[in-house]
Image 1 (tube, rainbow, N blue to C red):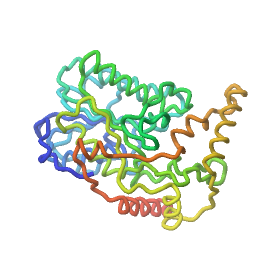
Image 2 (tube, rainbow, N blue to C red):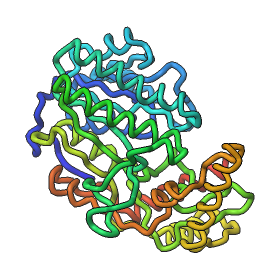
Image 3 (cartoon, rainbow, N blue to C red):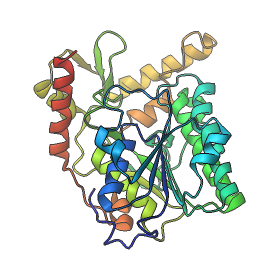
Length: 358
């Protein structure tokens, strides 16, 4: 998405203190670059000392030397660190999250406890103008949608996320609940951002919405379903605008691009442009039945078979669905910076390079 902050009449001055958590990450470093491009001059970046410094997840030397950036290593599990980094911050972009956590306690600690610590610090400082919480499409149930077939911001999120068996989904739902609770108790202003599948150089995995390779062969489960892709540069645009646009407090925005490919189209392009491999298409009815029996056996075995593939997972991941970015366009005035065909080409090139150097 493309927009000029100077044309949108940002709610903050260009020398306002901004804090970005997860600034070393796949999306975070693009958010930093976009804020610099728009002309903001006081950008405080937090990254954990343990952040993965491979895969492009560090700043370049020139970015380190930029006088507009204050780079701090710290841990959001530390209340002292949270208090220090949020001092004077009027806009906070909260991107820090742990996608790799498989256990519920670890995911809760690294998404919910960390968010609580940061929000507590904001209450103490009492200078926050907006907290941009970067969540995920993972929170949606993809059931009982108001507009049949289309997933948008009005759709329900998981009421019982633990039942899906996915720690990331559980943590993101609880994180959102935490932000809303602090808004109600302390009137902390927020905007909720829910990206779809964020892709681009640095994130070369084929998403589970296309299929899974767990069993030694790739099972193509998406079929004709659209994939809710958002190219990482487009995603960063939307996140930045959500922090500076006037009149959107309390709003939720889904981030997806235009011209979304189907799972089948994506897989065909991947095989043509990156590498060929064997895959088997699993029809939707069969995949639903398999998830049903997986769920039943997991219950019967008292968890000896992890409840990874159940009916909630099927609805959220492989159910026939269309996606809308209408609200993103209307309320934030965004146009897509990187067209989908160009984004896919850059992604496939990155995949080829990764395989070449493996």
